[in-house]
View 1 (spheres, helix red, strand yellow):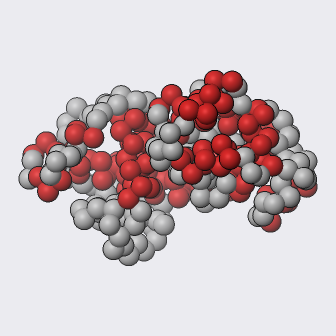
View 2 (cartoon, helix red, strand yellow):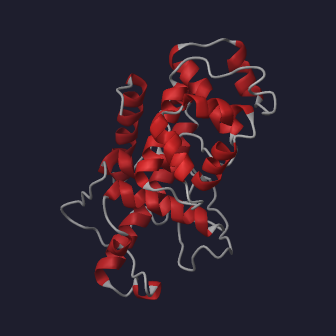
Length: 273
């Protein structure tokens, strides 16, 4: 990952908030009402990730798996999920994961609503977890029926074009393909002015994006604009940046605390949604 001073600011802020959250009497962000339980088919035992769409849940869990450097069986019996809770080790692991996911969700909402951090957050690199529907996004790049997709294909390396040509239509991408795609998207966002009137003629831009575009920004503000343009050109496929995730602390390796806590100190904290 390229060095980015704004990213460093966010990391420091995130770690500071993590320490606050771990305090016995934390000064925690103002929490909104707990979300209503959804009734979808994504999973009967979901307590934190209340997703109706099983595919979105799988994408999220894949990101956690890569961030921690563990397989799914660390927390789950893939043959019978009902045995997860009775199993002592799996129960501890799942409770710890639920606690950390609650904390991550709240921290991201808190940071997103802080005007002092909003600009820096917008310029953070795109990561695999930000591809919320990678299969659909890749199909748009392959078909290239819109000017933005055609432009991106011209920017991509021969290696990435080969991945696109060999794509088998799966909803989830192989890791090397996904990582290369994300890396080259970040090259585009940092490569100068991405917007062109004809290229974005069919894209509905938000008033905030239009306002930033009219300022003719440069530097990190231009990166923020370019990333936002990508998000709005592919709604539902590329998510808004979230500065705090599992990878921020774990970096692809499981680092459990020296003393595992069987309880969940954040269980009663309602989620900000």
